[in-house]
Length: 112
Image (cartoon, rainbow, N blue to C red; front, side, top):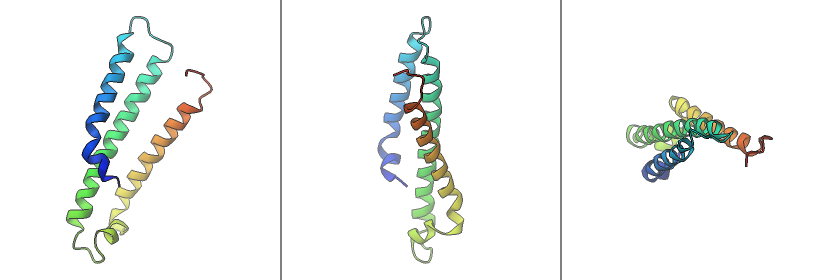
């Protein structure tokens, strides 16, 4: 759970995404070979990160407001069985994002 992301970076993420799309789509008449790949990759990353930040904000609400009276406190509530879907989604999105960026870095296409 990263509370700093839910408070500060969503606006920066949106600006980076739309600036990237503006640059990539500005060359629509004479596209580079990997413009479509980068546009699709950026869109998938944007959607995953946005959903992860929204889910993380919801997790903070559930954890600190609804789980405050849980025996053992909010941290005991975090590891309780009722929190497994939240924890699994967080882990799954993180793994997918890491695999996508690693795949882009080690791709043999040579587009860098």
